[in-house]
Image 1 (cartoon, rainbow, N blue to C red):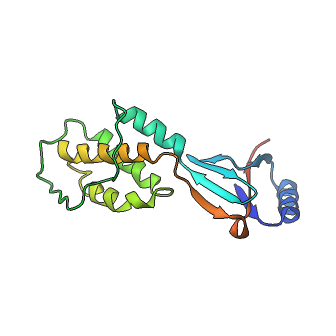
Image 2: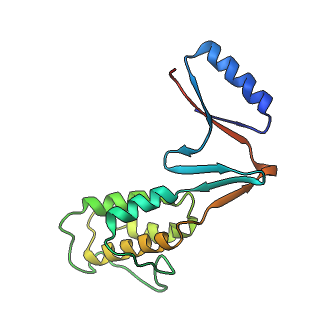
Length: 162
């Protein structure tokens, strides 16, 4: 459970009330949640998926190249483009991971939508375009979303057991 508010006294009140009813542990300020890295500064909160991108690109890419865009302009993919992939499992896994990465990299959403159209029968060309998105993410790995303090809430993480 994540409890958020801009009033730390209210957070303490909620924690106290919850701990009266449920067995729980205070995990402190939120730093990492479901592959989403959260860092708080006096100015605001940053959201990043740097580690998630690192792990994903390390598993899928064998080189260190990066690209400037997730997909070239004007690309029109067809279901019949290229030879069928022998193992479609990794394509499906990577497309699903890219959907999740859209949280902090919304600029890949269009490309991921195109690539997700081919999850039932991807080809080697579709897979090559998917790897291009990973190379783009590797090149933009340090980009983060910033939410200024005026709009931010304090983030605390809790587990349901002590």
